[in-house]
Length: 77
Image (tube, rainbow, N blue to C red; front, side, top):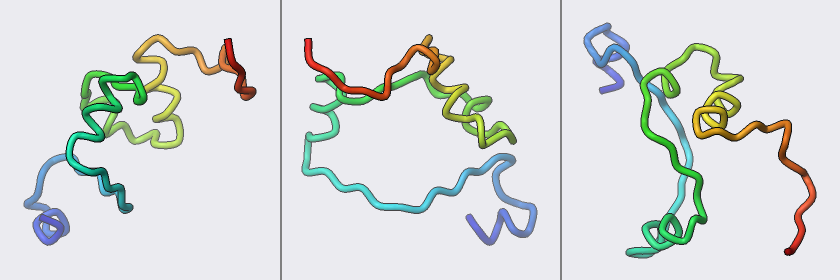
């Protein structure tokens, strides 16, 4: 795929991310079910917009979260 992209024959849009994360079987599904992750509907606009520096802000806004209203301090209720 990388070769095809470099030759102009690959997908129209691509996003490359490097890293590693590993979970035992079922762990990620359980964490999502327990609201341990924020999820949002997939959107080409969110994934492939050229303004990568504001991607986090746009994704959070897409699920109704205004980052200006979040606190950097953790607490317990």
